[in-house]
Image 1 (cartoon, rainbow, N blue to C red):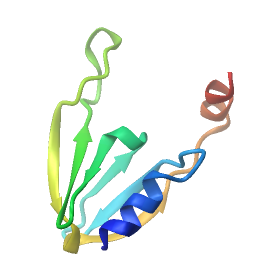
Image 2 (cartoon, rainbow, N blue to C red):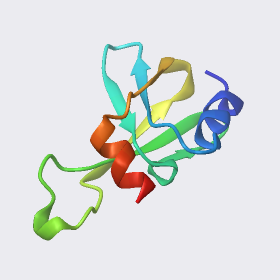
Image 3 (cartoon, rainbow, N blue to C red):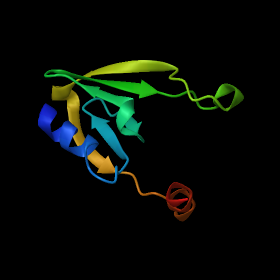
Image 4 (cartoon, rainbow, N blue to C red):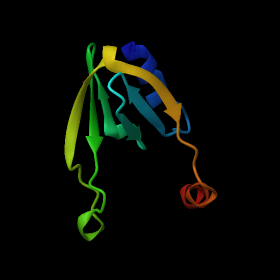
Length: 88
C-alpha cells in the first residue's frame, strides 16, 4: 500500500476508524488517527491491551508493518452507542 493511501484514511473528517489487513492474515484496528504513524516504507501501529489498567489508555506495544504487507483497509462500523458518545 502507498503511504498516501494510509494518510488519506487518517485525515478523513470526521475520522472513520478502520482495520488494516496484512498478507500474513493478521489485522490491526486504527480507532484514532494518533494510533498510526506512517513513513515511506512502514507504518507503526499502537496496540492497546485488552483491558486497560485504571482506565488509562496507554499502548501495550507498537507493531511495525512494512507497507507492502498491507493488503487492504476495512472501515470499522461504529455502533449506535459509540456514535452517540462521540456526539456528546
